[in-house]
Amino acid sequence: MSIDLQPEAEPAVELPRLNRRLLPATKSPVRIVHLGLGAFHRSHQAWYTHQAGDAADWGIAAFTGRRPDAALALAEQDGLFTVVERADAGDSFTVVSSIVEAADGADVQRLAELLAAPATTVVTLTITEAAYRLGPDGQLDRTASDVVADLALLASGSGHPTTPLGRLVLALAARRAAEAGPLAVVCCDNLSSNGTVAHNAVVGMAGAWDEGLADWIDANVSFVSTSVDRITPRTTEEDVALVEAACGYRDNSPVVAEPFSNWVLSGDFPAGRPRWEDAGAVFVADIEPYENRKLWLLNGAHSLLAYAGQLRGHTTVAQALADPLCLQAVEGFWDEAEANLAGGGTAGADLQIPAYRAALLARFSNARIAHHLAQIAMDGSTKLRMRAVPVLEAERAAGRTGAAAALMIASWMDYSSAAVAFQDPLADEVAAANLISGAERIRALLALVDPVLAADAAVVDLIEDLCGTFGERAVSL
Ligand code: CS2
Image (cartoon, rainbow, N blue to C red):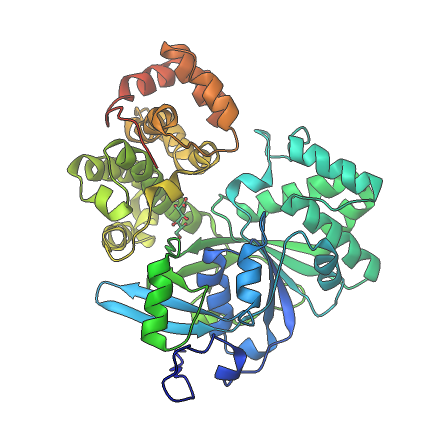
C-alpha cells in the first residue's frame, strides 16, 4: 500500500516531521517483538507485516542491538519510516507503520515486560550471523568472552546482559514466570537451518544458566526457519533529502531497498502470526533447498564480489559485477553451487536456477542501488562458513576441485591482509594468522573458517595457489 502524503498546511519553510497524524491508520497493538532494529528489518519483516491483511492486529516493538541510535531516530517519528523502493526506472515511496515501539536494546526490562505479555506471540531476530556464537559442533560456544560475561550476569541476578542471546533468554525467563504461554522465535539471519541455529544458541544459553528454563523453552518455543531476501544498502544523507523533496515531509530514517523481496518460512506459530502471505511470504515444509539457493547463489556471489571487487578497486556491487574478471569468478562459483543444489538434475530444475541466476545478475546490476562492498565484507569468517564452505565440500565430495568456491576463500584471505579496516568477530585471530607466511598462513586463516578443511593439505595448496588472483592492492575503506 502506498500512501500519498502531502503537508496539510500552505507551503511552509519547515516541512512536517513524519508522524502518525499524517496517516489514516491507528496504532496496532504490540504482538511481535524484534531484536536487531536496522535497515534490513525495516525493509523486510516490518514491510511484510505492514502489508499483511491483518496488519491492524500486529504491531512490532523493535529493539536495537549495540547502539540506541536507530531507536531514538524512529521514536521521534512514532516508529514511522519511508521505504524507498529503488528500481531502474525510478523510486516509489511507502510509509510503513508496523513498528509501534522502537526501543534501545539495553532496555532489557522493557523487553522482559513485552515477552511476559500473552499478547506477544512472535519474536523475530536479525542479530547478525556472528551473534549466535555457535562452535564448530553446532552448539553454543560457552567459552566466547561475551557469552561468559552474560552467563555470569544472569547467574548473579544483577545487571543486564549485553548480548542479544542473553537478553532474549532473560526475557524468556520472564515469560515462563508469567505463564504467558508458547510463542515462535523466527530467525531472519542469513544462516543455513537458521531455526536450528537459533534454537541451539538460545537453549544453550538458557541451559547454561537454568536447566529448567531450557526445558521450558524446548516445550513452549517454536523456532521457525526462514530464508530472507531483500537488498538493502545503508541509507545516505542524499536519501533523506530525496524523501523530503519527493514526499513533502521530513523523515530522518528512510530505508532504501530494491523492489524485489522474498521470504520463505518453515515451522509452527503456536500462538498465531500475521498473514504475511498477503505480502508474498511463502510457507513450506522443507526449507533447505530455498535456503541454500539463496545463501549460495546470492550471498555467496555477494561475498566473492565484496573481496575480489575491493581488491580490484571497486566500491559497489554493480561496479564489481561490471568487471569481467569478477563476473567470471561469480559465474564459476554459481556453476559449482548449481551442481550441488537439491542434488542438481531434475530436482534442481524445480528451483528454477537459470532464471534465479539471471534475476540475480539484473538485481546486482541495479546501479541505482549503491550497495557497498565494504558493508558485505564484514564478518567474513562467519559468512564464508555458509557461503563458500558447503559448496567447496560438496564439490570435493563429488571428486572435483571446488576451485571457484576456494577462490572466494582465497580472496577473503587476500582482503584480510590488505584491508585498512578489517571487521570480523575473529579480527584479532586473523591479524595474528596474517603475521605467518606461506602455507602455514593459509592453514591458520582457513582454520578460523573451518578446522576440518584446514587439515586437508590439498585444499590448503589449492587456496594458496589462488591467492593473488585479484591483485594485492591495499584496500582503503
Ligand atoms: C549481504 C546480505 O551483507 C551481506 O552479507 O550478502 O545482507 C544481502 O544483501 C541480503 O541477504 C539480501 O537479501
